[in-house]
Length: 182
Image 1 (tube, helix red, strand yellow):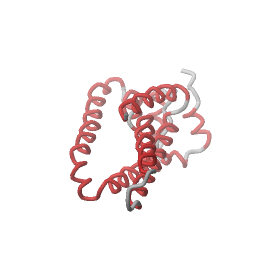
Image 2 (cartoon, one colour):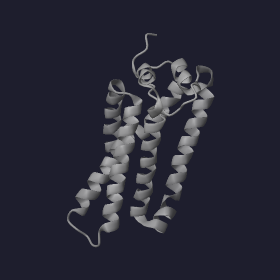
Image 3 (tube, one colour):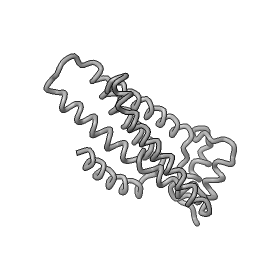
Image 4 (cartoon, rainbow, N blue to C red):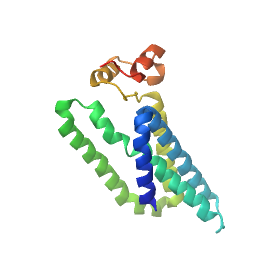
């Protein structure tokens, strides 16, 4: 069921990527992932016995977590390789980046049983939720909009010295969020 959920939300992500900016998608994805993870963690931590609501609350939270995680946090990193790396470095840089990304996913999967036995499932989802909160804050503060931007415009953004998106003047943000004439 989670694989079907990922597939459906991956199709939905394709639609969203054509309609709204990458920055907004990541903020929605990270925020939703954080909310569902923290609700699930709190629910699992606070329950004493088995209730008839368990399967509904846990099911909704798990599928919400999987779906919203898929929309942005699993799809955007691959897209960003093509948008942030120069053409001559895209092959090696993209390969190395995806290697590290998949190695991290593999490591988390391998350490999951040990962490679960140490802190329980509620603790694991608490870690997931807090990580997603950090991702939301990072995205809100720093992550630039790259949709419809040339590589040169993105490089100019990072070369200006002030990488905090929220401290940019409105004219700078509009320049980075409106389609270029190129």
